[in-house]
Image 1 (cartoon, one colour):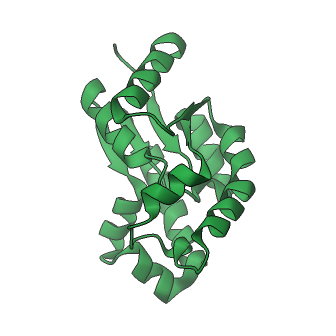
Image 2 (cartoon, rainbow, N blue to C red):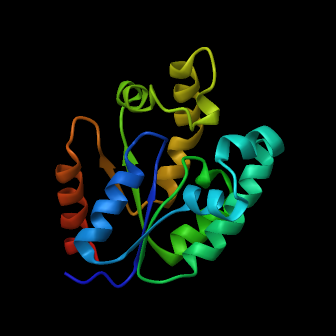
Length: 173
């Protein structure tokens, strides 16, 4: 199968965007890019450190610049940060420059997957469940608004999700 367009993964932290994107890129022989890793590479520091120094506003400015740069490329599979859709410019670029796949999972699944991660500044709170619920409530409609498709990852293996994505792409691209 040959996919002509870029493929962009959106969704909350812990949903599996990076893992699924990497496997799909291998399957389709496309270039895998993670926007958060690119931000860290350009900044020379970790995302938590950027949050500490510049706050979320500084991070979001860096994110907007990297999304503009990355979405201008071709033949890529891009895993984005969970908050990428908060910025209108990012939403427009993602929607206009590729196929947008929204990966979704329940709060319980997200909590389980993020429980041992120390690289998620927005979850450094006394009540991660409440924080995830608030983030998903704020962002879910934004994810849906730009997505070409929503795919559930909860309770699914990586292989099952990649197969679902491939079937979607086969039938719609």
